[in-house]
Image (tube, rainbow, N blue to C red; front, side, top):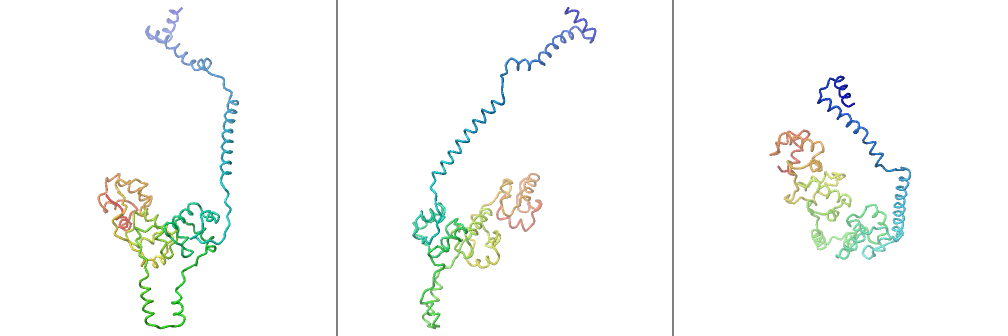
Length: 316
């Protein structure tokens, strides 16, 4: 029978004896491989009811969800409820619990308390707003309840002398000497913190934070004129402050190595847009390392004015 099958295959396909034997081995193997997955599934697979299994999973998830909700509810119940009640207060004497009842957050009550423990004293209402991160909106609500003057009153002797038209030369000299001896603000923009910046008239909590943040992004100020680049700070306000601020020796500038900096680092600098940052990386990959400011001329979108502004903040 097998010999007859071999003869038929050889006559039909024109195979040699070796090819015929290979054909007889290959065909059964192909048939086995073709039906093997079905045989495996029928022998080793387990019955699976998707509906029942899904129900089990959903029940487990709902149990976890209920437990989480109950825990969260209990957590909120344990927190004491604080009732806000606005009333007159003296920030020099008020306790922390009373501050909370006025709507002042815990982190601010701690700062106020630490400020007083270190010898700090609130003299006028606006002194409270100078506490770091004290919100302007909260101060506006509390301002009318603060039992402090809006400003320090002038000495009675000065007021009476002025009202009476007194022209005493000795008094005039002493008054002029007193004015000259009064301390004048002289603030280094690279060293001042937000509290010190708030001493400048017109600089509140928001502006002081913006100045510090811009200084950090910039790497430090080179000239005090750069203060006008801070968002929202008008030219008139800068003019009013210009004789009270200065920039010390710029030996602590934070610079960027233009040959090593990543795209994220470059685009964060106020003088480098995201497009220029991308062009710097492209030019760097084409021409290699930048060796001087003149090499940056190949960067598209970077003109001579921008290059001059950027020069102190980059290294090669």
